[in-house]
Image (cartoon, rainbow, N blue to C red):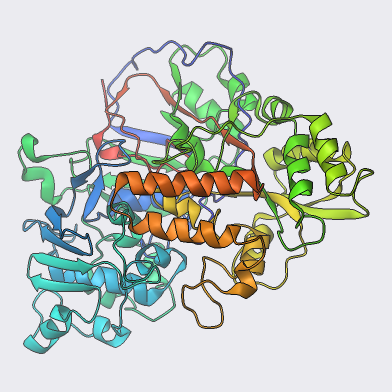
Length: 607
């Protein structure tokens, strides 16, 4: 996977709540509310589902566009029909057939069918933007932008239909309302994919309107469509209203929504018609957002709950502050220390062992997170399927043991020199980095804090790159979809940190040939440990046996843990914050960073 940052702004995640109190007293609002106003941190990066890669972007796009399947309420393992009415797979799960709904239209009245869905998948892969890997790991496409731009996808000719029906590509049309997808044509290789349905919930897999796009710039390979950057046309329960960049964005109920005529028995959380209009306001500061919530001009906050928010909301008796399950903290960002495994000193297992035992995790949690975070054991984060299946205890602070390990490494008096330590220069990262700096100094490891901007950090941690100047630093990853392999490819296998990306080639891909393979130049260092982890991950992604996958995750977790490949730090606790009287809240598992942002707004209503 790629280290795609889901944060438009790295949030303050220090959380302080009065012990034992998880919510304020809830009172109903005085009158009916027809519009839900959310005081949000920032706006979308793009409204094109094939382009957006931030949480604010996903939060808007998923209201306007729809995918073949969706998560069943807040489940991370079961799915409900969205644009597909039903689906089935062969015994080896390489071949999937989707029976599409026949009454679906885009909000402008254009029809949806298998040709349109074929177009949508292939357009996303031809654009080849940052999220395209979600499809390309399983699927391939040889379709040209010229074909996408010059074909009628409402009534294709026989010659055009022959192209769409050809199985030379992973996605092909069976009939007007039946679509076939063959998994195994992407860079993961010719294997079944255990988490395929999870990938189909991502915006990259959403249906877009070919006629609308053809009329507004069409498709250019490897380039985003500038018109779709701030315009949208989907099949979903909402349409885009006014978007004043930096100020607010309106989502209006789709008055021509295809599912409005369905009986209640056929509805689910993904397709239910909207009951409220939604306005996302961007007040600029957390103080302004809290003031809007307190006054009642906003009904929900898209900020993390911090000491500042707590102070602002003091005295309010109609505000709900609700703790969310650990998966939301995990999708916000699983924090860890990376080590450059080929750098001097940090290529020594005993040195890495000393580091993990020198970190005072209690201090880190209490001082940098106000006590509202928890340790974890990677590479799969808490809340995800197959997290720490053998229940290994997290690394513990033991200064005496850390000094013994430094002695065993041959450095009883510490390491010579100082080492640049990269992190994002925001309040939460600064606090954590300063604590770690003091902890490591006690065992003779001196780090020089190198706080950088988010853009610099992102470019430094993105493959390809040159030799990394960093031997150690703080890294994190947030989910593209809710499946354990989205983290393991990125973290446990090469691909999620400056050292891993630049030293090992990224995602197990041989940068010379472009093939997924074990290249001894990149993988042949730690006595085959990385090779074994890579093979475990590869097997887990295609192992259709639950017990077989668990065995893989047990092994890769144990190998990472015993060889101190990373120091798994903390997962923050996150909260949703809203005014009382709001009903029908269903948290989308893709609520990365903001539980209030990525949800099914269409199910919500006031009483």
